[in-house]
Length: 329
Image: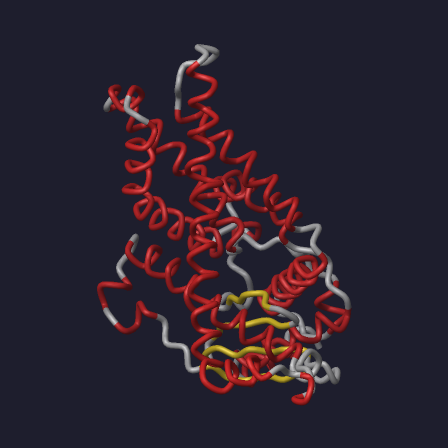
């Protein structure tokens, strides 16, 4: 294997997720969440997270594990996102008890935790609904408007281009929000910390700052790969079954939802492969997702990098950390 195509020095199953003022990292020692508290300290807490694919052999099969992993990341990711938000604001926004109304006190006493769980479920449902409207219904609606006026014959490729443009516009808009910018900075710190570790460098702020923030195993790349695969599969279906181009859009959307699990499975396998290889095929197919990371990651400040380092050190063994330092001494 040529030097260009070699795997990283410390390649392992290391990955993470940006949170509110924190990072959830997974590695050989398990999972840990590091959060910057309001007092400036970094709190690192180990999490007993057993991947679903380890609970059932079927969940670990190729293609299946991609679907399972995607659903798992949505469920657990949202859970830890809310937990990090609570930790990072603890003690800042709670009004004094005397300022709370009787109704507020009654709700807090009888429905406090249940209310939070209900809000979480509603938020998750609304998130799915928004994703469906933006990335499934809206592209088809736009295509219907154009094809209705005979300006262009329906084709999945055209619909896919519209979906990509909507996806990019959505990310660009939300990235302008102050809180989201902070999350994207933590996203950048997560990638840079992992690159530092994979390249065999000592985990210091200065070494992490030198790394690039665009990683091929990123969830952004996964989403973009899913969109591209969806376009290819949709186009293939229309070629094999020409009648699909004439069906009502609601039926066409249902067809796309049915093939979505297959798209997830293939996309996951590609991202997994891309993380271990650096050949020309991977570079070409990873390029769109890596470009999108210019939006979903931002250059982190030193204090944010410190959180990334803390979360990563918590999930790699002491021996690995020592070897990383020795490789560069």
